[in-house]
Image (cartoon, rainbow, N blue to C red; front, side, top):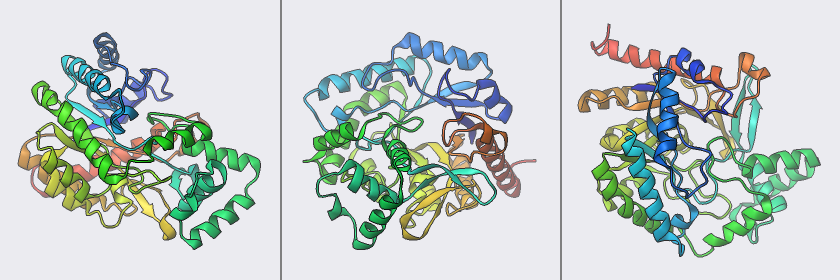
Length: 389
């Protein structure tokens, strides 16, 4: 695997030299300052690449080139937005970028309810609690008919949780869910978010899938010509929230997408954390069966909790079964004779980083621990197979 770390640009508290010292050889990043839907200009891409290369690192993977909401909903601006997306892909290819990550989640990107959940060892992790989501949905967002989406047990628990929260706790929950996490493509107020959900009132899962296919049919022929692999990031979490459909949550979802758009450029960012929230996703089997479509790896593990909650586990712990996943990746790499870009994802906030300002999930030391563990695991698997000294 090609070892990388995510970097959020010049304002990231983690510096490029820190990432290099952590052992990564590559950077995964984006032009986060460019508004969604706007063209990424070639000069800006080249300048960012020059900055990364001056630090002794390479940039081949974009995460992410956002798909604007008007593409997801097939709005009247669809043609213009598609043309702008193609323009950005052309500019990225001209600058040597050959993997472009995107997602097709409506409105919200990855969602958590606690950004500093304390673990038994004192480190902090990201956590998702469906009861907290329901409390926000019912009593802060006040989405019409939201109660229909929850069972009685969850409704009772959400009511009790909200009643026990003070104003500060309610504000923190609201900001955590909708203000925008690192790498998220949008941030909202609750009023804005509620209005935005109305644009999906007539869009169910089937229609969102059709819109996703239409997007790929429009951009993949160009990506094929450019030698770019478009890799879709799975839904996080991998199920509908706030009444919004999500359609990249299971192996079946991905297989259907590949069957409907067979272009070589139509690929997958295999995130073991996002897919791993669901016990019915067989992660090593997905690597084996979908391997030729995998262009990028997010390696992290979640610990599933009773009632549907989950939190970020250490990279070699939790429910991912990381040894079996990396063994499957090793088989894929040998079979196809290629090194797949990988990054350790969502590390714990730990040690000195507990006293620093960090992007939640993207502090340095937790990810450095994860990278070291994953590097050692891969080396051990290769050694056992007789392919490393």
